[in-house]
Image (cartoon, rainbow, N blue to C red):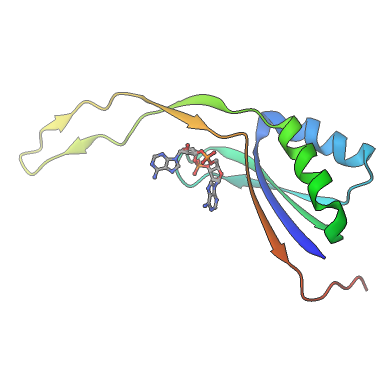
Length: 109
Ligand code: 2BA
């Protein structure tokens, strides 16, 4: 058995939840925050049998899109209290970031 942890953009999360329901995939959805952009994303935790992992990766792939986002770096203030203007920079946010982990034991009480 494996635990799939998939971080997707909020805009893709409803489509993916619906696909999981259609395909009878059990998942837990968490509201998370990206460490870099400090904006919301969605993390799914999915416990599955090994033979279903590929199918679930396909569902995640088909429902996730890469998008460009802009972020404004923090303003720099040097020792003389001069501040340099911060310009927005373009960041490509991937379709999905996915980890597949082995599960030692699985219980439901
Ligand atoms: P964020 O940390 O908000 O990152 C959003 C996007 O910003 C990233 O997209 C990447 O393109 C860029 N980025 C991140 N850190 C950067 C840095 N130090 N310098 C320059 N650009 C940087 P993705 O790589 O597609 O990641 C999307 C989200 O997936 C991330 O949101 C984070 O929540 C999660 N993530 C990505 N890699 C991870 C990892 N190795 N471990 C845990 N979470 C991860």
